[in-house]
Length: 266
View 1 (cartoon, rainbow, N blue to C red):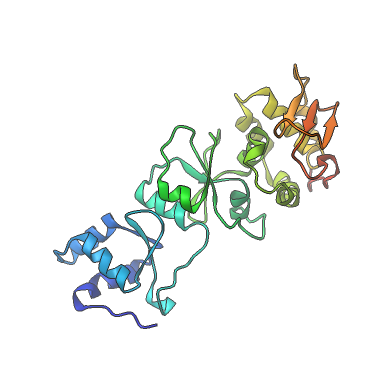
View 2 (cartoon, helix red, strand yellow):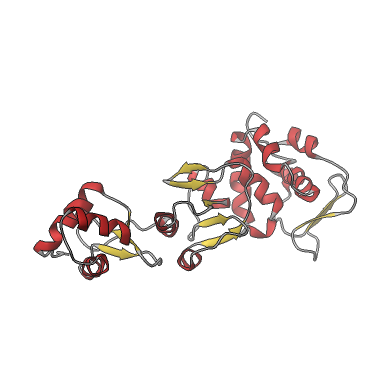
């Protein structure tokens, strides 16, 4: 599909082609137009580029995906990370990171990413409406700083493991967790797991011990304690299994964590 470029827009498209940004913001367009000596307001520039298929919607106002000429038409890169990239382009300090299955995929331990990016936002932070629409947002305060993977902040594997135990209801597919948990445990650093656990409730530590008993038994035993009351793995309801050893009532796991294969090197 041919996309026209009026002469007055050619310089702007040329700059975008040279820089190859995934996300273009209104502020970025204003800067490019100013440097090119174009007096047309940035919103008009954005409108014209959208009309001609050079900018594609991201779901967030003031941020678009750039569709370069190499795509031979108004075709974006797609993928589940566009909403979080757009949100961060607009608010670079937004306390957001890829989490759970999306983080594990970014670490290269899962073959596919969830259809909607799973992102964690600090408990009291404001979340852009477009990010809520384009991604699955959960509230979680990580103890460790994120890594930058796939060009976005991403929870460390140790954070993911503790997140599973702290907020089991945040997980949408425990079946998928069973597939990558041994690999995540094999690559996680024990000292960082303890750091991520610091200051968290006894229940989180107990659930983590229960979850890791098969894949990382040595750490699970170190984590084991005798909580004052039974700890629920999942919402209170019909039990799938009960462990007196770990003091856990499990209502959520579709697998027995004791039967998962031991992580290599653990």
